[in-house]
Image (cartoon, rainbow, N blue to C red; front, side, top):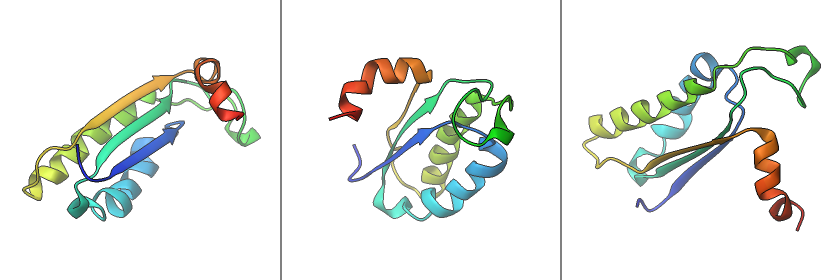
Length: 107
């Protein structure tokens, strides 16, 4: 395990086009020398159904896009001559998440 952890959580909306370039520039490369491990929990939804902005309701989502992060992180570490970090992905639907973690969220 590395000396630090980058923890990401959320709905992977527009991940490849919008989020990933920013993560590469502002998180992955910025923290490369710290040899962080990556832990990602994402909502396993293909259509936005709840919360957020009304203009996004019904928007299509490809939750598998977030898995690109693993290859990107490994490639950046390889280019830097660093050992491969731990990269862990976990996904749930919102209902599964609340069933599992509701008590922790309302302490």
